[in-house]
Image (cartoon, rainbow, N blue to C red; front, side):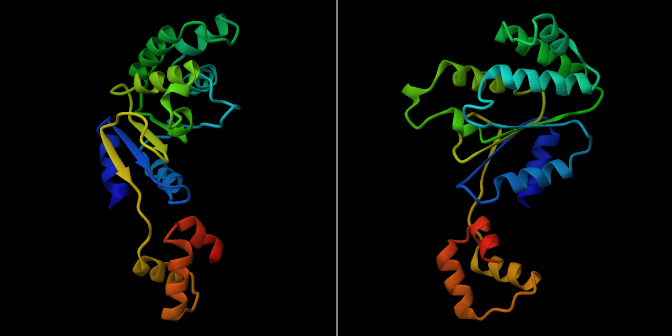
Length: 203
């Protein structure tokens, strides 16, 4: 039901934010949504702290993606500038122009973006603020799927993923062909707290 609602929102050109604790299934739901997307134009950017958490990394990856889809304003500007983003506002405008010319509707996915915004916002770096502002500037120009443990950007719809219930865990065990007793089920639920990743490890 969550996937159907999120997909309908994205297909309407809006943004969806999936949030919840680590291991709750945010990325898994995101992947399921990409598998149901109506076009192959899917961009997925996973934020890795200190590896690709600079706006230049995002713009270069996005420019290459758009170039592969047949629109190259951003890519050509990057090439002209030697692969370095010199003007964030220009990069955003070129991205919007490229998105407007795409023959198909893309899905832009940004995973782990909460890493860019610390709990103490006073310690947020200028580079991370620019990164988040760039993503925010794409709102309304393409469907956006945002994923993070915390909601750090405004979006049209927010889905907070919850733990699996005891009944859902029982269904999972049954489908996996694993026999269990009510006592086993209770212990498993107590140990994992209904967290899918922990349940998968136990299975």
